[in-house]
Amino acid sequence: NAGVTQTPKFQVLKTGQSMTLQCAQDMNHNSMYWYRQDPGMGLRLIYYSASEGTTDKGEVPNGYNVSRLNKREFSLRLESAAPSQTSVYFCATRDRGEFEQYFGPGTRLTVT
Amino acid sequence: GIQVEQSPPDLILQEGANSTLRCNFSDSVNNLQWFHQNPWGQLINLFYIPSGTKQNGRLSATTVATERYSLLYISSSQTTDSGVYFCAVSSYNTDKLIFGTGTRLQVFP
Image (cartoon, rainbow over all chains, first blue to last red; front, side, top):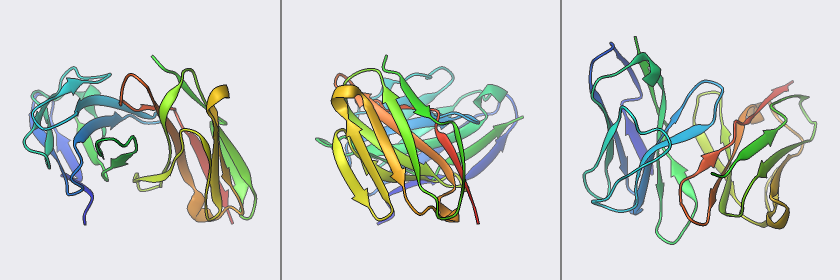
């Protein structure tokens, strides 16, 4: 089992470009999350999806959109990238009835 | 919202030494996790421990939920223990994890 996978691993964008970060899980978990980690800080929640077809905002949603395509996949879209969105992005999952979250390897995004 | 504080912010050890990392939180929690972020950036689950004590090899953790703190113990530290250790919690009315700012551990041979 791959667990939680994220693509791409690295990305460089110019200001104003758009891109979609992909997350997929084979753990059959219901909830999925997107976090960002800025240098020297802990992770902050951007968006989450408690189940297929639902999404909710986290602490720092501005500038992002998400899609829960199906139970396995949760994507994060930057419509017009800004240098302030330079960060490492982590996807996580959680099983229904459990509290522990499991994290993917991260995507390192640089916006110039 | 719930606040999470970790101490110390930085820790430098020689191989073989023991250490204790602390996490204080400001409200009751239904989830508390300890993570190790290795030098390559990967987040590794260490413990899910909203209360009680757990041990896994040289690592152990204790959470005293009534006093709102958790401790992570690392014994006989190795250079591979280097990285950042995060505590993260969620409270009863939400499943959103709130992270502390981490403890950066450096272990030298």
